[in-house]
Image (cartoon, rainbow, N blue to C red; front, top):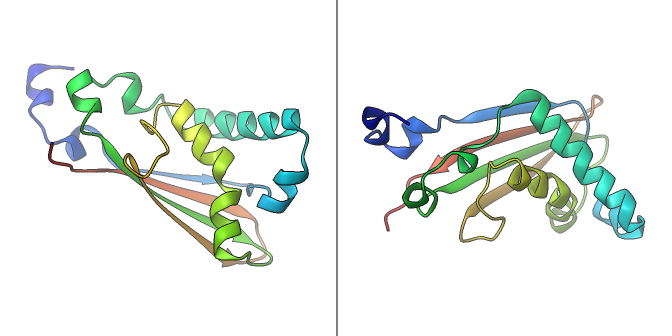
Amino acid sequence: MTRAASRLPLSKRYPPMELVIPRVPVTANAAAQMHWAARGREREAWSMEIRAQTTPGPWFYAKREDSEKLRAAVEIEVTRKRRQDPDNAVASVKRLVDALKGQGWLVDDSSAWLDLKVTEVVGKVPRTVIRWRILETVT
């Protein structure tokens, strides 16, 4: 990173991202009944979808002093034929959030590093929209 770029606010250095993926996460109930290897394949499938549309995230390149300040807001909008309960909707995106972390778009998936919002929309065409942005934090 150049010297001038390092003086920019974090939100300017790491602009917002939006991904549209033509699949939806498996429900939390279905994931609970899956074999552990099948859950791993599901997480890897999400990683491949994210990798196909982006470059590695900022935490692969961030300096240590930056990574200590980087908190992300992620909005995940899932279009399904039927809505789930709100707690199941959040639980169903676990493998997707793990994939974002693995690709360097999140420092960690704990609430200290991630502001997560999951919404579900009823529609005929299943898809997942991921909106990611940096939250400015003061340390």
